[in-house]
Amino acid sequence: MKAIYERTISDVAMEISIAREWRRKIFRLKENDVLEISFENPLHLPDCVREDMVVNKLTFYVKIVKDCPEEFDEGLIIFKFWAKEYPEICSYSGNNPDVL
Image (cartoon, rainbow, N blue to C red; front, top):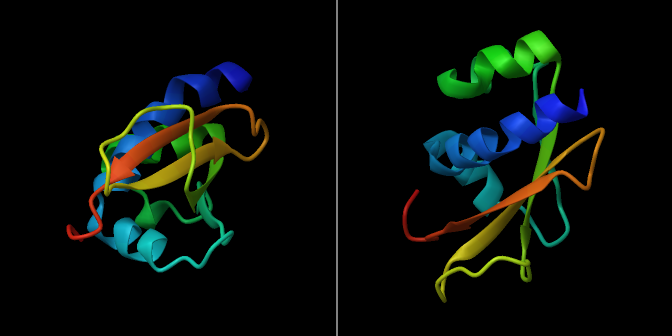
């Protein structure tokens, strides 16, 4: 199962980061709030990751972070994604807050 999360997390992070509905939800999060991205709500998942998430019953979390080990342009808001069952499996995306 760990390998499936490792293989999938980058696609989930990218697809959720560019999906308008998800971006709005994430940008509305308060400090330290976490949003769940789960196979249990397949209609809300981006098409590109839906099948992998549902078939493998994957759940990820996302939150806004101030610091991360990756470099992003100044002014971008950083989303951290991680696997529910394996929090060490994570991915980051830099997001322009002016683009919803």
